[in-house]
Length: 363
Image 1 (cartoon, rainbow, N blue to C red):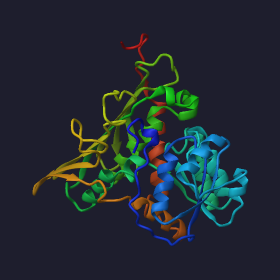
Image 2 (spheres, rainbow, N blue to C red):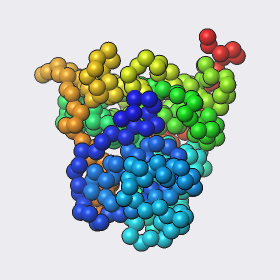
Image 3 (cartoon, one colour):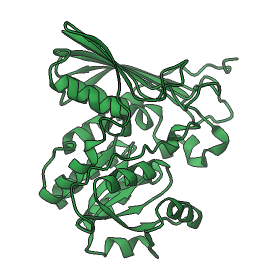
Image 4 (tube, helix red, strand yellow):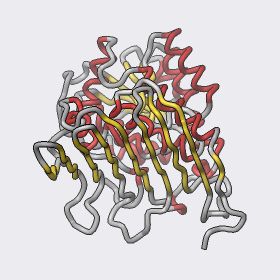
């Protein structure tokens, strides 16, 4: 895992193959975001076979092949979409272009696996929902801060086992390091990335819905700001929102681009989950002030007070479940409605957010 920024976050898979070699072939199209590496690594760990890659930027393809030398370079997107052996296409295109790619993939008879945010407008969401109905294919989403983080997986397992009773509130903190010189131009264009509550916030909405067992949520309040980066007027460097789920639980999340350079990794991501019989805290990427690394979960309930260190012990079942879902038509990894509802709530939060940007930048 890169300590510089979250864009390169790609944890090593814990191999748990659910298919044999060549049984499930997939391709990568769209390499604009570094999350494509984690997406592909997770699928490979589940036994899938990476056969093709395509991106209009040859430099990105060269870098991708350094990580995955076995992959063949397609001459065009169409070459991949016309290959009947390819069952799924993984993509991390520019966020505003992810939906259009997904529509082409599904119309070609293949399942689609996209980086978050899976789309950037309500019109795209409508088109994606219609395409799923029309084609019967999957529009799966890489909400990596839950499905590719071991503390997040373990927290879900504990909740399913009743360790903290009924979940009443989820608080998610999503700080990231900006590392502006390394960012592409689209990163600062709100029409391209969708705004901070869509880009990063969709991660947190996914977690709030998942941990509370909710099917929907309404946005009570939401806020955005560009506090300190006037040279990038399209950037939201801060955002937060309060949600109320259909289970009666509440959720709060905060996203920002203010991780200081002195922190050992790209962000001190944390999730706090309150239940009727206990609580869970996740310190996902570090235990601050120590050299203990990532993967810390704290549980307190009527029976115990425990610090779990889960790195390398829990794994990432999402990827194997996704492969099997594509083969069998099931929805064990994530339901389609959940994937769409998470981004729908994030879009609503962004669209209705109060803009707190000061007339003069914060010193």
